[in-house]
Image (cartoon, one colour):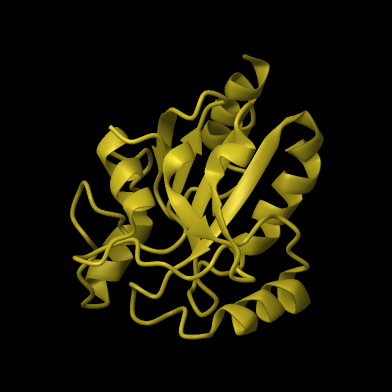
Length: 180
């Protein structure tokens, strides 16, 4: 399986990088969207980032427009929205696809590493009641799904979209990885 460190991605400003610059840090990769009912999670993610960045946690936001076109903006508009609405300082990347035939290789790798997610609470059932069809396992269910990567670049956990940044299961998993 390809290492996430070797997969090229673009920053939100358009610079192509590899994630190898984050080697030795714990990563929380999140597919984000600006016009989703879960968008307020930006606030909790930023708070978590500020609390844990000096301990070695990086939160990496990957905007995606795969779910009801809830991320329609350009990279510049997304950056501006995140800055003005949620004062986001964690790294954001260029908009990518996290589902479907045009899925970015990063998300192909993340999904192959951990096909099952932790937490499918009542939230996804609400989607079904609204007549929506969330993606089946192993695909990314919706916006704000989270993948936890250890200091060696291994994907160690995957959390459902409604698991927030202050959820005890997520915080425990992050604490455990930071302590290693």
